[in-house]
Image 1 (spheres, rainbow over the protein chains, first blue to last red):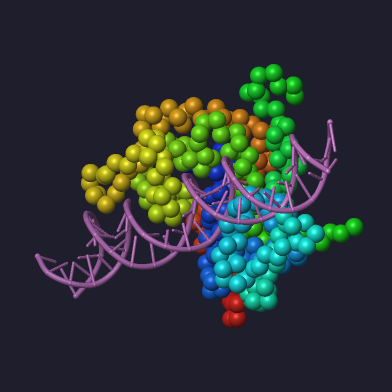
Image 2 (image 1 turned 45 degrees about the horizontal axis):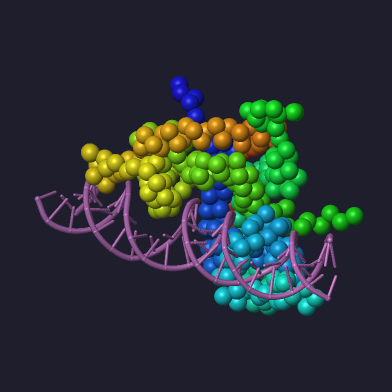
Length: 162
Length: 162
DNA sequence: TATATTTAATGGCATATACCACTAAATTGA
DNA sequence: TCAATTTAGTGGTATATGCCATTAAATATA
């Protein structure tokens, strides 16, 4: 009867992305809850485990995150003893991020829960779909995409040269 | 040479979604900046304009957002005179959300900027891709998806029945 | 009708994330 | 070599978002 869209997310990919991010974040968090880690925190621990000895700067770039935001986000993880910052010897501006042994243990244990969430997600969406979606999202996260976006002449711009 | 994934976002859709959300959010915000509105704020104003007279509860459900989170997020918009809460006459628990005339004007003006961001995004990703992505994201945001996720037997669960 | 339960909203607290200003250290260039 | 610039990180402030406890109002139930 009425196919008028109910929300801006029907037009606006940014809104759609944020909304889906809230939903999926919630679903993952519910599964991860027994660990006591938030979804973001588990992601962060995992990425730190993966990027051994990366600096804050490097990590922030990988995560497409503001450097200071990363610093703030790490605070609870440092406070709880999962993560530590180690000053670099050769460049005294740099701090390297690493898991403590306790953090390693926590990350590994929580991975069981993550696998559970992962399995549920892929069951609900379909394995192919899930992978396609990740690819699309990771494309958007690339620096090259930001450059393309910046370069993109929007036709409303007077004097755009194509 | 080395196709080892650099990040958990290569596996984890939740991480991929958050990362892409940061990137795209940034790109949109840069375009919207002259308006003085954050991306989220513009989305919210637009949704309020669209869902005329919705209650906080209704709006929160549409946005897949926690009710109290919505309340908090609205505070700056109320403070700045874009939005007002009107108590419902028949159910005195309920508050209805609406734009002030000033808010209507602001939303309309800012839409020009949004269109610019929109155009850039679709140029950068491709119109078809963009639409497919929105569809996928909106599917995830549905209540039905959350139910499917909850129902999904993850094979790691002992005694799963299929 | 009186009580129990559910629902809407608020306020406090915690994390997630961004921007800005600032400090310190490294790098560039005259 | 020394000043100018760039880079890494920190701390403050603001928004975005979730949870919990609480209040008030509506609904259901005995």
